[in-house]
Length: 270
Ligand code: OAD
Image (cartoon, rainbow, N blue to C red):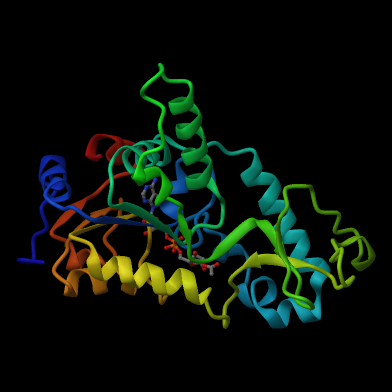
């Protein structure tokens, strides 16, 4: 950042992003707060009432898979009822309509992917001649750093698959099992003490180094390695634009810091 007082105006944010050929968008739980998905930290955050070590570690799953699935089952049910916010939709339209924009998210709620699907469907319904897939759409898959609530993974054989059915966590016997080897499946999310998917992580850092701008939306910026994506971009010379109602450790890197909710600011910004 150039000085200690970040720029607070949306037009400066637009100009900063408009000047870059390659842009990454790093998002966190705050972007989904406007869709009704609870964040992790702050008032009402999931980690206020629950201990991560009881629910989101390999040890917790080994000790009590039923309890872990009960919690993830509840989260799946809640998130399945949530819709992408205007911020998810604006980012999806932006990424689909322009080359060189990639969304990297820490969220496991699938709302960026859902927004992209809706955006693609709308484009298919557009008048003839306007519905071809652009290179931006083909390259535009969202990079999900922390996995997905709607995927399961087999700790036995490693098979991973999409899964949207509701979870019966009444007993260990009713938990989902692997079709191939019978092992109790786990949610395909990254737990504390685990490594992120190396391909997703490497690609994210590669994009961070190449980006001319990095838009950071709704993350507390305290969980590594995701948080250092913004600092890698900043070190490589990218402009950093942050959208968050609160200051975060990323604010000191930001050239433009926009204080407010993602749903208010992002559609105007992009
Ligand atoms: P946090 O819950 O740590 O932070 C949410 C951020 O969103 C805070 O900085 C809020 O100020 C901001 N925020 C709240 N409402 C907002 C809104 N309407 N618009 C914009 N911003 C808003 O969530 P993350 O930073 O995503 O990891 O947390 C990172 C990781 O910690 C998560 O992916 C999860 C968690 O433990 C795993 O489970 C591996």
